[in-house]
Length: 456
Ligand code: S3P
Image (cartoon, rainbow, N blue to C red):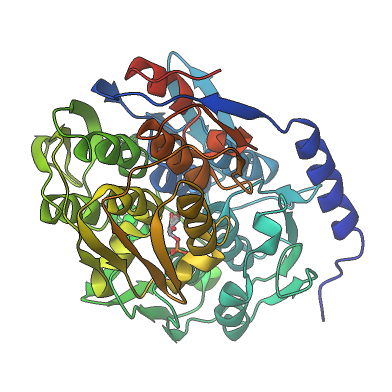
C-alpha cells in the first residue's frame, strides 16, 4: 500500500509562509576578530542524543544540548511521539518511551534539519509508527531518495510528494528485515538512518561506507550498550525484531560543536598577529580535518585535550599567519564537509591555489554551497573557478566589500561564512535571511561582537 500524502504539501507551505514573515537581515562590519569563546553544543550529537534518549527506558540528563532550531525540531518531533523533555537548571531531562513510540497526531515539522529528518525516518520506519515529515523551503529541496531506497529494501513504504524525491514524506514501516547496504555516497546521515532502522529490524543490518564519515551514531550505540560491530568501513547492528528495542537511559554531555568553532578558527588563522582560544570543543577525529588543513596552510594551532574518555574534548589555540594554498580531496572531504564554505574563505586569503575536489555533496546541503560560495567570493573580488565537485580559489586577494546584499538562501553556514569573509574586507555588508544561523549557532552574532566584531 502506498502512503497517502494528500494534505502534506499544504501543511508544508503554511510553515514556509510563517518563516518568510520573520526574514531578518544583518549589517556586519570589518573587524579584527580575536579573544576567547566557548561554542554551543554539537548539532549532530545533540540530535542523536534526543532521538536515542527518547527511545530509552528511563530518564537521561543531557548537559550541553544545543538550543538551536534543528536540535529543537528533532526534540519536539520525539515529544510528538511520546517522549517527555524538560529543561531544569541548565540541563535537559528526556524521559524515553522504552522502545514504544506513539503515532504522532500531526506531521513532524523538521524545520531546516536534514540530520533530524533522515535519522528520524529510520527510527519511524523501524518502530512501525505512521508519520509524515515536512520542513522549510531549504529542507524541502533536499534529496530524500537516498533514504527511501534502503528503507524500502528493508520493507518500509516511503512516499515522497515533493517534485524531485523530496519532502513532504510519509512513512509506513514496521516488521522490517535486516539488509546489507553499500552506501552510494559518503553520508553519515544515510548510514545512521539505516543503522537506526536496523536496530528494530529482524536480523542483522550491515552498511558499508565508501569513505569514513562521522561516527556519532556508532559511538552512542556503544555508550548505550547497543550491540554494534565495526570493521573498518563495514558497520553492523543486530536488530531486535519482534522482541522490541530495549536499552537503559544514561546521562550525556554534549561537547561544543567543532563546526561552529570552525568559523573562528579560520577568522583568526588567516589574520597574521591575531590570537584565539576556543574552549570545550568536541574533537572527534572524524570531524576535525579542518585542523589538518589549517596546519598545512601554515596556521599555528595547538590543541589541548581536557577530556580523553570517549570522544576527546579540548581547547584549541590559534595564532594567525599568512596562509598558503592547499588541495583538499578524497577521504578528507567527509571529515570537513560542513567546514568547506569557511575553508574557501581561508583560500581567498592564502597565497597560491586552494583546490577543493570530490565535494559534489555540497550541492545538496542546505543550499548549493559550491554555487553560493563561488558567487559570494566573486562579489568580494576573489579569483575563483567553479568545478562540478568543488572549486579552485587563487589568492591572496584584497577583499573589497561589494555594493550588494548577500543572500544566505536560508543556509546558516553560507550566512556565517559571509560574515567572516566581510571581517577581512573594506566596509559594512548586509547579509539577508540570517534567521537560519539559529539552526546551529544562535549565539553567533553575540560571539562575533565578543571577539571584536560589530553588527547591527
Ligand atoms: C551530519 C552529516 C553530514 C553533515 C550534516 C550533519 C550528521 O551530512 O553535512 O551537517 O549529523 O550526520 P551527510 O552525512 O549527508 O554528508
